[in-house]
Image (cartoon, rainbow, N blue to C red; front, side):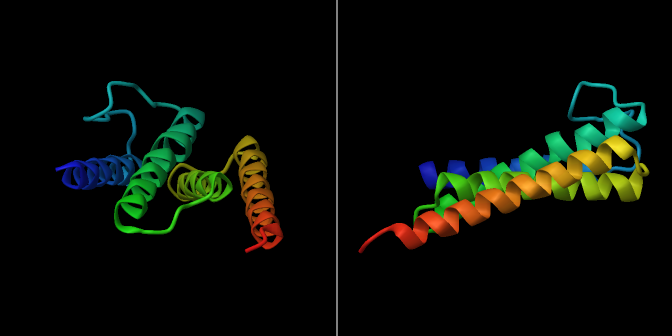
Length: 127
């Protein structure tokens, strides 16, 4: 029962995330009671909202079907990469902004640092 609930929750999160990320006009979001009419708001919705929902859905599915534990650094890396994916999709759909590019570089840099930190710590663990 718990596994089924986790699977359904992750499918809903992924569905809502994909809906928001790939919907052309974010001024009318059926499932989300907010208005995203300008470029900056649409960019943030696609990256932060949709990217986070996709990441959470993926992480819940991975947790449900995996026997291996996932480090906190890798979880944060996945979240940052999905947010960066949302920002890239926003560049394609909504257009480019200097602020968006600056934030994208920060997100990718943070994901890289978290990944390197994870690998470094994993290599330091004595078995």
